[in-house]
Structures are given as structure tokens and as C-alpha cells.
Image (tube, rainbow, N blue to C red; front, top):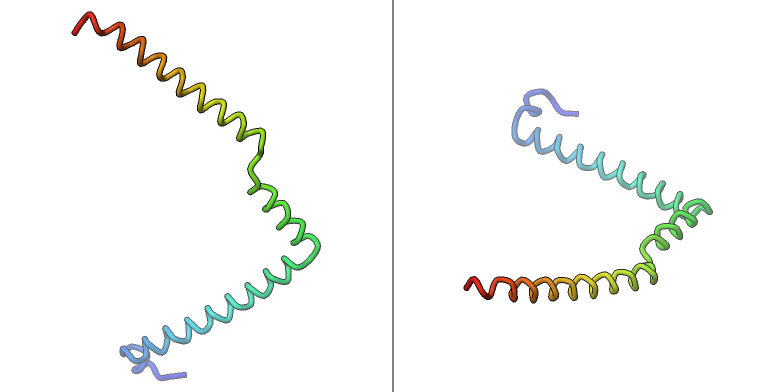
Length: 91
């Protein structure tokens, strides 16, 4: 491609970097097209469906989480009130 003297110079290194970049771009293009073809098969569509199902929040968990948050806040206020009453004589 180019001689050794040019390979050690800055221009040679630049040409080497450009060729590596082009090679990498071709590899990425092939990988993307393969992945897209794979995702368009029946198995790929099932996999996409399962990924979407994972991202949907569970309604029962949301209700439980709300109840837990309410319980924690009430417990926190109860404890702080009792501690305030307990430490008042020491002030």
C-alpha cells in the first residue's frame, strides 16, 4: 500500500488510521444488518415483545409501593413525634 518510510511519518499514520476507521465502519454495517435481519424473524419479534413486557410497570406493585410509602411516612412522623415528646424534658 505505502512504503515503510511513509508508514512511520504522520501522513502514514493518518492513512493507517483512516483505513482502520473504514474497516471498522464496514464491520459495524455488517453487524447492524445482521442484527436487523435477526430481529425481523419470528424469534426476534418474540424477543422484542418480551422486552416490551418487561418495561411495562406492574399495577399491583404500584399499589403496594404506594401503601408502603404511606406507611413509612406515617411511621416516620409517629417516631419523630414520640422522640420530640421524649427529649423535651431534657432541653
